[in-house]
Image (cartoon, rainbow, N blue to C red):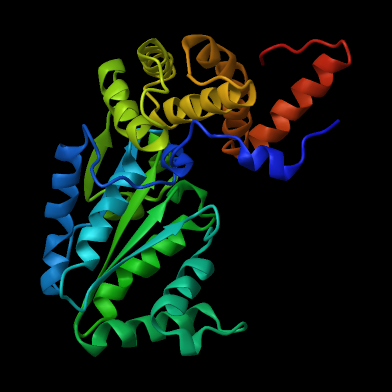
Length: 313
């Protein structure tokens, strides 16, 4: 007979605060990213006094703390008394110049957030808002390589500084694709990459200390075996030093232990978790590929499934 929800919910959980292992969780401190955070703070600090900040391009492999570090700085920034603002957007959602400008209007001039307004209208309303008290606006574009008309967007945002009587607009671009810059026009590239910041991969000891910090909050005391913790860090270090991967691994290992009625998370659960996590990582990796590369991959898969072969051209 299948379990009831009541039976499941009555069982004691080995988790204390499961969301702490989510890649979207922002901890109070970010270990091993102090230098990068300090650099970002120095770059955006002029905006607190309504002065222009440099445009910044942040890049590094997935799971190296790029987005978390920028969001951490944003939280500190918004606590300061200033008319200036930082605005975060994920370009998987806001993937065009129109959508980016529309979102800025929605956040700061919502009375003009209506369907049908064109780019020029939205642009003018943003300029009017910035000029009101000469504020600085720092727009954070995460996964900036996903913007379809990126050259147009960069040109529009940076051109605004020529059209503003007072106030400033600057951009922080975040990407895990270093070579995407080569697709930009020379003008856009020199503007966006005015300052660059590289996030290196985490090593195994760093990943272990990150996991230790999260495990204390996520699990009940004494649940996670030391060997399981070390193994998760070592596996993630092999996978390009990806902290997100390490967190997924620990979360899945905990879920497997709980489903089996175990009171501890051990190395065997980590090994088992690796199989399902690797499948999800592969799916995520395919989703980040450009459309034409996905089509090529799909064609190869269909050809292979049909018993055919392919060769490099």
